[in-house]
Amino acid sequence: MASRGLANVLAKNAHDVVILSALRTPFTKALRGGLANMYPEELLAAVLGATLARTGIAPEKVEDILTGAVLQTLGGQKASATAIKKVGFPYTTTSGTVNRQCSSSAQALSFLAGAIRSGAVGAGIAAGVESMSKDYFPHRGIPTRVSPLLVGEPGEAQDVLMPMGITSENVASEYGILRADQDEFAAASHTKAAASWASGHFDQEVVPVTARRVYNEKKGEAPPASGETEWVGVAADDGVRAGTTKESLGKLKPVFSDDGATTAGNSSQISDGASAVLVTTRAMADSLGIAPIGKFVGSVTAGVPARIMGIAPSVAVPKLLELYGLDKDDIDIYELNEAFASQSLYCITKLGIDPAKVNPFGGAIAIGHPLGATGGRCVATVLNGLAATGGKLGVVSMCASTGQGYAGLFVRE
Image 1: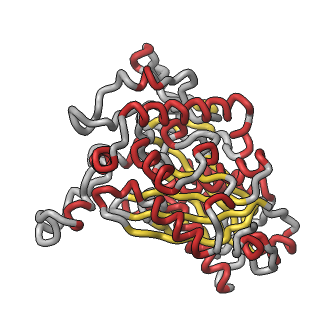
Image 2: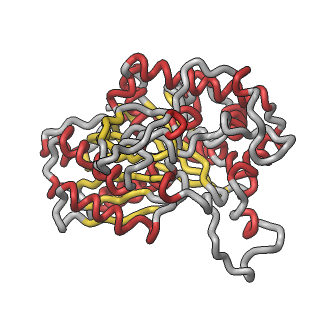
């Protein structure tokens, strides 16, 4: 029996918010990966330029660009606006930045969709970017200035400052998530991502970037004596390790606690990258002559205790499905961002969803997690995955620092 809301979700109307393009750069390892010598505005410019080139949309038709950015100085607004204008968008294209931690670019899409539905915006881009090479260290996302009047006592206010690795350990210990299961999950992420690259699957969503070369001093590499910048093509995620096994990951030491279970191998990778999702109404897409690749139905947010923030998708996804009258089995692909294997395993079990439907092409443990760009990456991956498998409905969800979850619903066109 079909769920009560399925027909409404699949129906096509002129006012639908449709997706014309969903792209990302490669995601590469912070500090030593292929994009480590690139500035965030350069990464954003690369994916925005590719969006224009692949869709053929005139820049002046894009009225607003919202960019998810978590760590950048001044909220990333100056850098994002620089990229937007450098690519060729006119001064009439407005810009803004959104920070809802790991769900920032997904939230940018939700905000932009609301503006489009209201008629305030005709077409726009929800983008995301993070250079964790340049902006994550040494503070690692923890504010260096917080009023002592607001924190210090045990409780939620103090817990929002907790390192994310500790929240992973809290989930693992509180809900009995075993280290061996976490390593097995992480190894599977690499296996799936490696297979996706080998088959050419990711070529549909990833745009190559011409980047300043990164030199590996351990291999004896050094910049040329002339001082000239060397440029190289970066076309693939460089954190994916084919052949990773549960056994090899089991040899890694815990990072946050001597007797803990969270390691560098079963956590999302600290990465650099950018994403962009072009959206408009179905009516405008028809007038532009650009065929949609998907429909954005809607999204929800949900709050959970900050100390176990990783469980948030297990709350956000049911809230989303209830809103649209769907059952968990109606969804063909779940893109649940792999912040940590601990919270991923908890959420999959709590939601009672088929593990085969979750991140079938690999997740952030293998692909990487440049914070502001991840939401858009998940949108690109879920739509690309639905197209490849013939599925119809996809959910994107992730936890976010400070105790939040996001879940969005998508339909393949």
